[in-house]
Length: 227
Image (cartoon, rainbow, N blue to C red):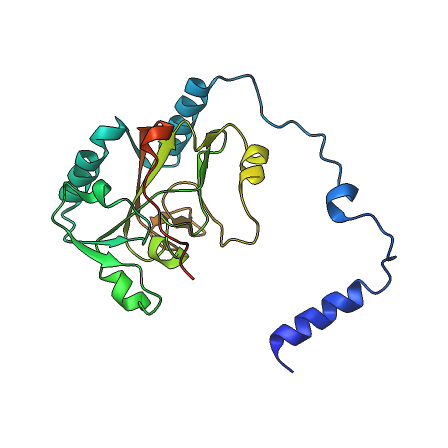
């Protein structure tokens, strides 16, 4: 018997005494809590997002859509990046101002190969102002989860205002729980018993977030989600 079969067997036994007419989970749990704290407009939510991202030690940049390629090119150049992982649906124009070698997001890439890559550039699914959190869901411009966990430098583009929400409940409404969700609040870090902070343990040591002002007519080109 596999570990999977054992776990599913325990779940079935735990649910054996649940009446068949029991209310579904989404109806049984009361959800009358606050959807957001305070009354902010879009601009204030974006400002709060930037503030909380910076508080988590992410590096925040702001620009207009036409400036995005030059901003990304500058950030890669300042990092000295010679290679960059590229999700399959990332708009090629975003990397139009860099000569860094593009490394495609391949299913067969090993952690050792990804560890040798200098940077990764992705979009995101949603950004949460109150918590300073970026959420990735493996979409076309984000790629597989591992490409944002192994390379040491992650540039994440957030389209403003369409991808910014005020609070977690609003973000959950936009996300598909069946997707591989990655919630990022600042660079990866941990502390030992003496509270010495070490960054880059579980993911990138450096997270740079570009808040780019976007309009519907500027929607990026996309490709199918990776398998």
